[in-house]
Length: 339
Image 1 (cartoon, rainbow, N blue to C red):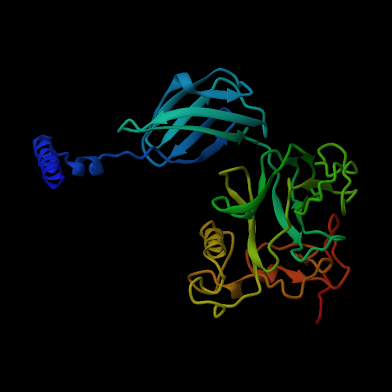
Image 2 (spheres, rainbow, N blue to C red):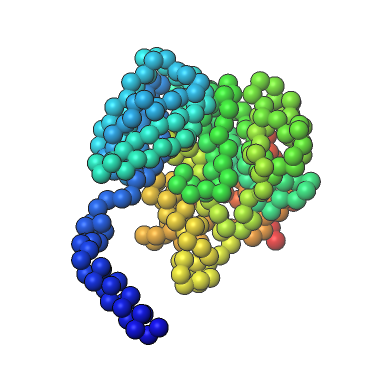
């Protein structure tokens, strides 16, 4: 038996020694990673740019858009695919895109994503009031103040940022006028009457709708982070920042790893808001001390701007109102809570 095993081993070694040796270094040097999808940029009403991590080529026979828009053509340009339409898309209209692209090494990526038609009539808007310590009777809400006439289609409010978010609400098409208020309800109960209001401001049911404001609901909303987070309002998905804020009850000494913010997520979101010019800090980097402190807020003690709001991109623009003085859907109260 021993001799048979030795003979078999010898044959295996001989066979192995006669085979070509694979140079795995060449395999390691070859690009085997597909392009990475970076987002869809919509800046005009008759074109979009689909962004990737590297130069790509488009497989036009595998490009589909639903609902089918006016005739279109597509061409690649460096790290993007530019799609040009013969006519205008529906402002704020929801479109589904499926496309396949390849990189220079032949690696392919098929993506399915959505985008919204460019809205050239977006009003000026700011975040005006919010609560993060919601209760069953007074769930977390964010009020948007409308500063000019227009149509809200495609604007988006993030709990987080455009690059990193926990929840978001893309606004439907609502014809608004200066002085209107939009209430974003971040806590859903599943009530079928939690209806986005686009024509009738008293249509929605659920918990705490406001008859004189436009009520919108975050699908399956779970409420906002109680003491540490960011809110950012953008013109569109991958659009421009309109307004934003940072809130935190922490300090720079709360932890060593995240400048006091408690997590990489919140720290990077605060940095993103500063990078976009939407918040200011005492130092070069954002710190919890630069944020609105929600410590004394409750479900009915909201954090809000003044009745004549100022927007200096800092915590001094904000105050906490006394108990039961939240003013969602109406002009903010100037009274300040005193512990």
